[in-house]
Length: 439
Image (cartoon, rainbow, N blue to C red; front, side, top):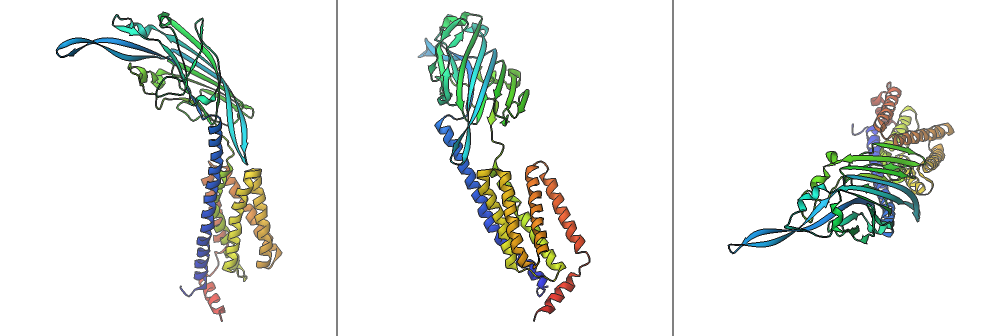
């Protein structure tokens, strides 16, 4: 077997495949590098404007001091313990009108959104009756509204509490939620049975807009002009309509579903603000040519193997011989296809880049194979075959859910064609005949 030319031919072609893995690996690294450049644009936009926004509130923080008896040196002594009661809304309604615009930095694009938000909250003060004790002194209540990045607050109205108006102050005053606004209200307001709070807030942000459903009953309605949203959060919208002009979505939740009230039951200064469930909407770019190019490069080995198999089959069925160096040059031209695809997709889009790269690669190989195969028809057939493989690969990329099925079908068809065309070939006879042809 070691003296068989056919055996060494297969070994040589396998070596060519191994050599081609080197530029393919470099190409994969280049795709990742260019993708990182694109991601840095989103980071620059976030640094220049605002990060993603998360709305927590409004809620009311009520500080109070409770005088208790403690024993010191065997004697009872009065000691004041400072605590905070957290009052969450009975009903929270948030509505936002989001307008998304695209900003360019070099050849890369990023999205910035501006959301005009209306917030309404109703509070019930019945749960505060236990604070009406002679040994309890209630401090000044504070209405808190926390956001993800306070740089994004462009407009903020005054707060309407029943029929009174109050102006917000910068900062939330909460250690775990430093970004936001707050205001102090008279403690006498808490004697009213219900408190109705409302105000408007205009936010700038990038990527996501999250709303924490703090209320016993919470709802969030979002209207946007962006046609490609992602609703990856703790709750999917109960209803949504997505079109080329934008989308409308609405969420609904309660304490029965999210159990948020349990995080605020203890009267301390640091409730569990981390990992709160959210209604979430993210502005995404569905045409990620770097991701598509990276997936295409993963199919490069399949494309090269099928091409090499076609040439090997052509050698087997005809008397014409293709040198391993010619195999290697054709393989490098297929690698160049993916590099051209990457370079052009940054400027003209993935689909047009794929068409241009495919036609360029097929033309290059057609001209080269006309001399190698010593015939115009064979060269044209192989060029058309490359275009067909490129078309099949494009379908694999577009049909992500059916990629495995389509890929398996292509391999099955290719294997069936090889088996059908070589079913009557005497492989031992070919090896002996080629060995006898040597001088």
